Image (cartoon, rainbow, N blue to C red; front, top):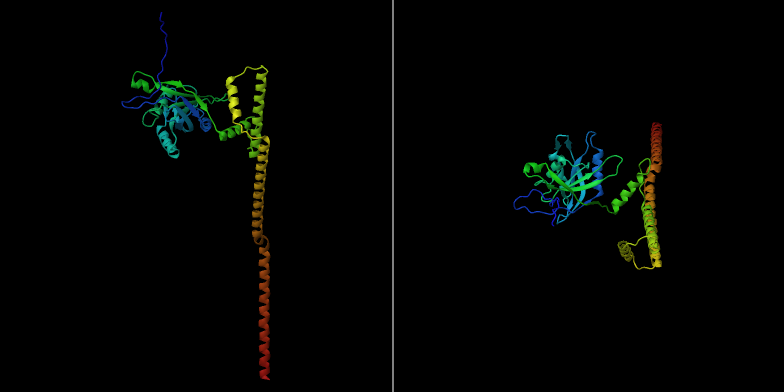
Length: 347
């Protein structure tokens, strides 16, 4: 006997279709860069006291098939929201979007964000604006990113896309079915170093931390690697002693990781490392020697101006005064000789 099962079918979200318009698939995965999260948090901290949430525009890249979206940057958009209506500065959003796309031609409009996990009718209106034709993301669906910024709680991010809901165009304009999509916050080595430095400041009373040097960063990285190796060794020993269940996936991952290790003898690695250290020390010594020589040359060049300039000018002035006095004496002697010659003529 057949049984009728009730279910809800949600179609793949697509924008309002026109005749001849090409459909594209919805994004299956959303990648978020840390700088976008920091910009959203900074916008939330600067909001007015009477605002429950703030919104903004998301920019990033989209794969050729539209199945993956990467959010790289964002900018704030002013809006006023009450219990009855919402007003968004559309003109500001269009001008800022044009400037951002001119400065970053590889990025495109991908959606918008809000600092609240609540989804309401106003969210549907804004979603339809960002996903519309013309200045929106059409034919791709707009991504809606929510970031919870409640004090004392962990930051929670969610990503949505929407599908049109409503039997009429007027009803569909202010309605939308938000569908969660997988998302992930990814960062590279540079972002990881910055995030670890920021994380160290949360345990201090002053909320400040110092920047590590290259040697300190290398030391921390080596300590972290040694800690991971020790943790893996304990796990392998516990599996061999039948104290922990074995995992085929983890064993395959460890095998692939160990296969990446170079087949080099330990003595060769130590010799190459020592040679590299000696090269670094020689370069550092030469750089310090050149710096010292340049400073010494600058001091020797400026020494006559700072030390001997006053004495030379004083000696010149005293010599001039003596020559002037000598000149006066010579003129007096010539006058006496002329007087003597005149007396001899009279005699």
